[in-house]
Image 1: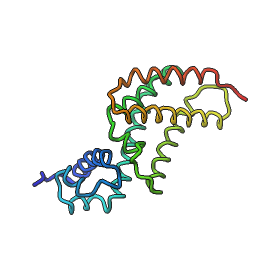
Image 2: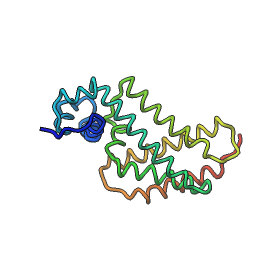
Image 3: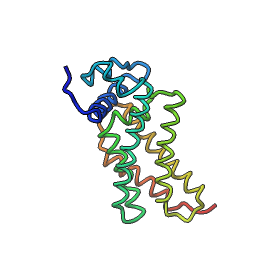
Image 4: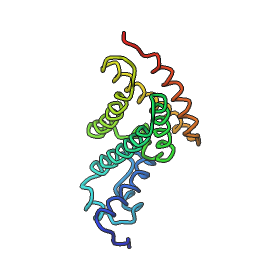
Length: 194
């Protein structure tokens, strides 16, 4: 029998274990029974917190996106210039991928659900990241150009991360961050109005 926890603590516990269940099996193969077993609760307890597997999955996506955004925001707040902003943001992102591997797989892995609602949440998270990055680009360029560069940076780090994760090898997030920051900074330094 599971330990009686307050509803908010039980919900957090379920979310914490459900990330690894969905990351391991993918949305379609994971079941609510798998989540309940991993959380050490009964299925009725699970349904007290989430009406459906889809609702749980969307909550997981939003939680993962929120954690990524918080980590990014904390990192860039400490930066003193554009180069540091680039370095710190890359470091925050790749540390998140390494430390919160299951959340990355949930959001961007090849087994992520591709239904309309989940896709909309993932797009919103990606757009939020690009919107957070765009104002940090200090080049003298118009806002549309700045936003496209931000979207490109998000795509670059997501692609590199997917490659690293799919290879299944351990990687040094700080080393990868430095490599990607060098590439990004070299491009951002020469961005100009066209």
